[in-house]
Image (cartoon, rainbow, N blue to C red; front, side, top):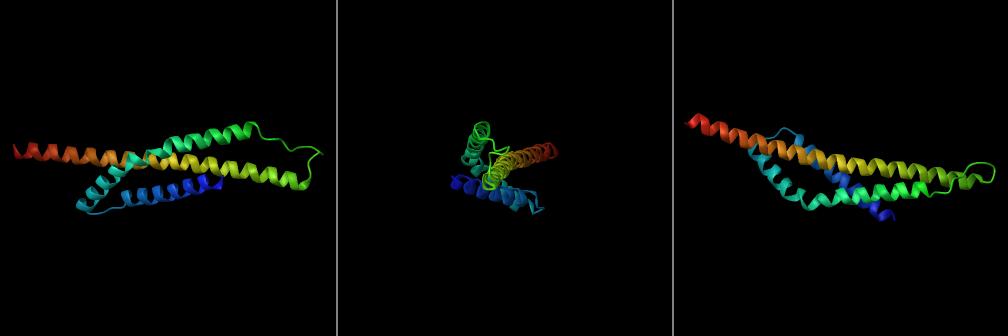
Length: 129
């Protein structure tokens, strides 16, 4: 069960590094080659969207069917276990949303960069005329 969260953690870390690289100021040639490389990788890495959605649904289902530990019937160990499971679920929800948000940010930055390149080419053609 923890393997899927480790995979998601590594994906979020890689997405954060890519987003950081995309937003760093760099020479135009390096930036365009980096954006084209990342654009090629974006479509296969779209798996993160349904994967995160499935994980969110799993967390929601487990939350709805979780045994409540309140009152005098619970021991201290059971109460601690219940609280730890709640904290882990909250952490995992944040992780899923971070993966989705970072993927969307990377997608938008690549798309904006391509639009800027296209507009610069159009402007260059108009100046040549």
